[in-house]
Image (cartoon, rainbow, N blue to C red; front, side):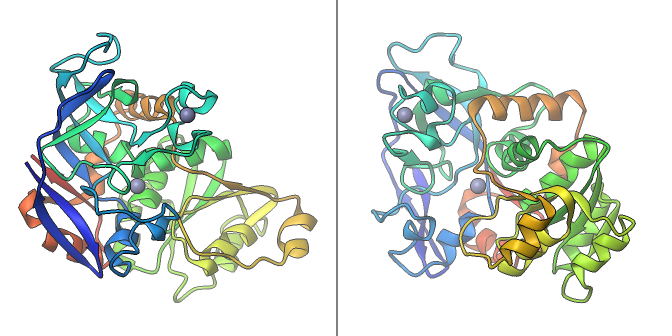
Length: 349
Ligand SMILES: [Zn+2]
Ligand SMILES: [Zn+2]
């Protein structure tokens, strides 16, 4: 089969790989949708050989890219219980492989494996930018019939990550939530928090992305390039600040504003990968009893919960996508995504 790999320096290449066959406890999916996630840009842009290091994951031969897998189970290995996975099942993949036995793996958090996560698909293990993909049956998450394969792909990282962060923040319908960055994760947070009933203030340096955020549920939008973000959020909240904020931009400035814009006793959550932030600890955090959270994606259970929430509320996740591609168009697809002005992209089979 053909698989897309990141070579670094904004180069992608299609290479030939053997079709995977499932070992004991494993399944093979035919990939129907493979999403493009903001974190893919780190591998795409980093210098050759540095792609894995960009995520602190060491270095190795390039693997098949794509960590938002969604498709149909086409083969199961020995020892796979039919309740875990069966041929013909529509499924998402929780995109990590751990030891499978430690307390974190056993509770669906393979990325927190005490042995160190063995594989992050699309980075240190073969991902979903290919026709087929292999994974442990225990990391299959069923895709409900109401959801498209593309929606499942979004939930398999970007949208699920927004869901996981909102859960950690205790997001609720009576809150005002500021979401910094309206890329695939931030825009998902805008959609999901709005569906929870929260009032969302969306921020981005791209007016195009802000227009999309408003269409998909944001009550107010702010472009920090032209407006003092913290002052604007305060003026929208009677001088108090937001109940909670989420940074999906990874910008050091946005992270600082995400902390400063919440009210006393407020919560700020970082989900954007990489980089750093400088805070005035006493003024920004201590003196206002601010809780600062980090959130890394979600568990298999959280992934299922996100899918259920989206399906039960009839949320149109497909509206996150502005670009649908074939695998052969990977070079162009990443060139467009790299502009960081578009909505989400997905490769469809
Ligand atoms: Zn483990
Ligand atoms: Zn991702």
